[in-house]
Figure (cartoon, helix red, strand yellow):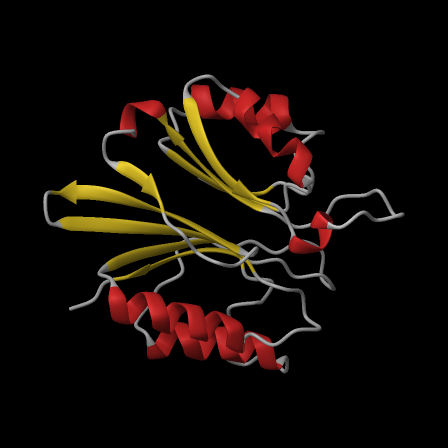
Length: 193
């Protein structure tokens, strides 16, 4: 399950219910808007889930604004504890876990929250190239802040489309909100041959 939550405080009860009702194994969150001192709030969502979360690096310094922003998290059911472990990724917009499929085979889940349209999509290519060259099966989940289309006049949209084509990845889910603001949530699977 992936969800751009846009503030976990207002929707935590919904998430708790969905985790249980749908028997979710792994859940990726973007834009939880939590500060470092309240990341533990995610642990209170359900006693059946473990949490690995990061806040936006800009929230590590005191701000007069007082409102949270950004943030990524991965939750996994405690029944998977023996096969799931967190990855060390030095970035506040990416978080990952590895899931052991067999003694020598792993699947990697990377939760992504890319910058909005005033930033380039080239950062994504750097990360995907790194993961793709080092590992086998990688599932990228999250908010890529781009539209998946070849004929878009927007550079970042075309970059994302090219990236998927160049790396033989496939989008399994996307949605549009409003006509002017396009939010894309993708799950992409990269299989190294």
